[in-house]
Length: 532
Image 1 (cartoon, rainbow, N blue to C red):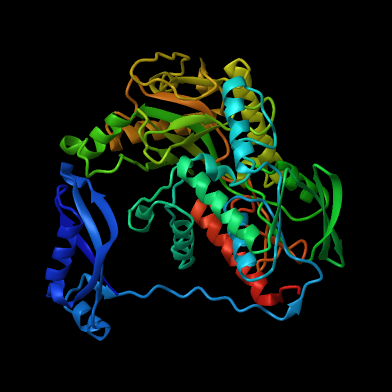
Image 2: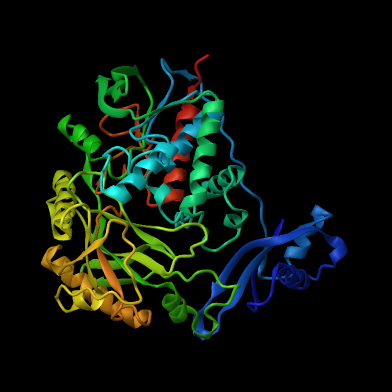
């Protein structure tokens, strides 16, 4: 296969035009081509006149001619999909592997182990997706929170109620395996070629269910509403785990545990620290959710072309260094909504979510400022306590019932509590209360966010417009801790435990977490052999 990059076309051009341009670039006739299709599509919106930038994949009827054809253009190169192959090891396990957590990391770790014949046991503290969706909808409507069934916990993990973004910066060849697997399980075909692919929370749910059913069909077992409570070890090596579920407490023999608990598993982090196991501070960020009209964002990005049907919903990513801190936007949700994401009683947490169509009136994104171990004397317990304290302050400022504090961006910049609702109507599902948001963060963080917002307005016109709204607080951008692991991916505190994914501090987003899960499962499979 040949990849022809940097084909630039007008917005009115389609896939046929891209294929014709690629063939002209390589001096190929239609008779020579076996298959031609779009491999990547992006938009160059610079200079006020957006255009399409395409990568086209071409396969020839005579594969031996592809190298010569690719050599005709500096924009072309031969491409082969890397083979994903695992050869099981020979070391015997006394019990089947256990995966703790069914977010992206745990889901993909369990899938790989199941495909390799290991019949993994999966523990998920929350419920299966249908029950989880009901719990989330109930909380949104009534304010009745289930601490184990919410936007943070349950089948699919926190990413289930998000935009379903599949963008990543890790550049790992395993990313292709993740994309292929998602496609096999019903993700939209466009994720294979769009520059900024996303699934959307509505479609992602079906994909997750399909993957879980494959795990079960291959001999894996999933125990929902089952929480990890303790690790047992002998001479520094895992021997068993303790769990608590609907049937009570259980001791489960285990020599290989994939610990993929997610960034909000504070009870697990506390359990590890109480048992003297190593837990380190990791950088994370806190701040607010900013909402603008989606149409205004697209006007700022696309100018006169805004609204053209060939253009994707406008997205942005902004950052600004303020002293030693970074203020940046995170998890931007075009046409989405701000959702109530608490997992502990008495705390308000915000996040963003979009459906596949991204058809909502508002754009929202986290506007956050970085913090790290220096802010907490390198004490992970203090970092977790800091998150919790902010969430409790937001709860009180919102007036209870999980209402969120909010203000206009200009009000935040001016250190006032004004909230004027005009064309931008807050979408936070539990409702909002006017508040001086500057009082919720420590003063240095507040001032850094203000400086960042002013810089964003210079980069994206209208970012601090009078109608723009901030809602608080965003505290779960990533895990505040890291569980240190060695070169074999085992926990430095206990052999046989494999910290994995975002909660363990090794990923940031759906794809990178899933890749880490695959990487851990591959390591386990290549060392051990399945029990017969």
